[in-house]
Every structure is written in C-alpha cells, then in structure tokens.
Image (cartoon, rainbow, N blue to C red):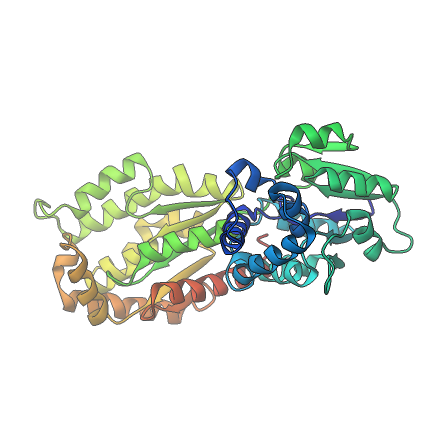
Length: 428
C-alpha cells in the first residue's frame, strides 16, 4: 500500500539536475542586458523559483526588465540549454514504480509547460506521468498552489508535493496536502526546513523508500563494445558513459584485457612488443585468465549492485582475434572461456562497424601500434570477417552501429539503440 495515492514533483532540483544549463543561460541573458553577473551563490538561487521572479529578486530588475531578461534566457535555452540537464539517480525507476502501483503522478513546475514537457520527453520520463503543470503563454509568475490545482484529480486520495524550495512546501500546505523537502536539490536547506515540510530526505534512495516502501534497487546491465582496431571503441565508451549518466544511470567503464589489478598486469604481457615469442595458445589463455578474474572481481559484482557496466572488448574479441585471425579452433576458445560463457555474457554488444582498411589507416595515424596491431592489415581483415560472422550468429545480442560517421553522430546512434533496448528490458 502506497502512503500517497497522488504525488506531485517539482522538476529542476527534484527530478533533474539542470544547474549547468540554467547557469549558462542566466549568464547569457545578463550579458545581453549589460547587467552585472552575480556570484555563483546568487546564480544557484535561480534553481527552482520561476525565471522572471529570480531575475527580479536576485538581480534587482523591474518586472519589465525581468520579462526581457527571461526572453534572452530562452534565446539560448531553447536550442541548447534545455539539454544541459541530468536525471538524478533512481528517479526513472521511482516514477515507473509509482505508476506500476497505481499512483497518480504529476509534475508542477515554474518552468514553462512546453519546455518542461520537452525535457521530460527527451529524458524518457514523460510516459510515467499523468500530467504536467507549468506556466503557459504569457504567464510568468505562477505560484505552486495554482499549478498543483490545475492538474489535481478528483478522488485524489492522500496527496504529497515533492520539491526542493520553500515555494513547494508552501504550495502543498495551501492545497491541504503533505510535502517532502528534497535536500539534495537547489533550495537553501535551512530555509526549506524552517518552512516545516511534512518530511525531508537527503538522497533519492530515501525518497524512493518514503514514497514506495520496499522498492528494490534497479537492475544492472552488462554492455560490451566490439570492433576492429581503430574503429573508435574507447571514444564511444567515454561518450556512452557520459550519456547514460546524464539519463540517470550509474555506470562503470572498464576494458579488456584489464579492468582489475591482476588483469591489468596480464594486459602488460599481452600488449608488450617484447612478447618473448608468445604463441597463439598462450595468448588465448592469458586473455581468458584475465577475463575470468575481471568477471569475478568487477563485472558480476557491479551488475549485482544495479550498475550499467560498459566494457571495451570481451569474449567476442577472443573468438575474432585468437580464433578467426590466429586460426585457433573456436571450440577450444569457447572451452577456456567457460566462465564468461556461462556466467558473464553481456546483455548487449555494440558492434562498431567499420572496414578493416579504414580502421587500420585511422589506427596507424593516431599512435604507434601495439604487438597485436603490428600484425598488419590482412590480420585485421580476418578479424573483421570474424565479427561479421558473430553478428550473423547472435543477432539478438549484437547491436550494429555505423562507425564511419563523426564521433558525435556515432554516439547518438549507439545511445538511441541501447537506451531503447534497455527500457524495453526494464532497465530503468
């Protein structure tokens, strides 16, 4: 049984961390107004209250000047600033769980309704909401109680307003409902606590437990990135981590061989140019040994914690490199990698698809090749053929991405495909 049947959320500072975009857009507007830029402590107070109210209260503007400054703010905000945002951890999971348990869930925000809906839709939060209330048209000064009443349903049951400012607490009180002050937001904690909220929480974990008692942590997810040398895996792993974290996920980035102290020592042996005449079988066994340690020490524990693990290369690399390119039997490669195949296979493999020729040229142009990369183009072509075969054999796991585009375009395609897949599998 939920403690509240109707739950209202503020947006900025409660569901999302919009500080970078708000700082940048407020500074842009003040420069356009030829106004003195206030301290970071003052700019931080722009988080939460209606925009025009902030320009008037914190910068000393008249109402007319505040409206003009708001217009300049939106000059930058509409094309850029609204994406400079980040979903707080577990918020997506909380909204989904509230809906699953039958609650009415709405957002009441001082941000213009159209902007709020665009943000919520972009970050994939809108499907979990029954309504969004925010200023429309020429409205600028909207108190929270008015916004709440706009979307307050009949037969609402017990209601609560969740927010990070005194305005959220006062609005809830005026509407005769409880309030939850989130102290991880942008409001001044002393002020919001002095306004006597019904509850206060310091973390989103506490908020989840308060609104959905007994709610479990989210599921973890294991993602690997594969492709021939030079296809851009490291770049894409970094961009993907940043994007997933922006959407509220906890992410651990790792690599193979390596990822933990023992496996990193094995990596030095495998990639050293002074290999001591290492034979293909030894190479394959070293990769498998490093992988087994990596799985036990890092991958499985992180996934169990609810973390999204991004790994640059995994067992598919052994099949393509030591199997298809080195000529070792695939059955033997599979046998020595039983730990991976039975306990640690990825849920999704992003395959950065690029021809061996293009990737090889790119790789040689960037830095001096390591021991394996020194094998030459023909070796890389065999690897490419191996990956193509693996993609045909495991179409449910492999997610091909065109790696010939610009890095930002590749990252956009990779994230869109992965995020859609994760949501479909309940990874919130």
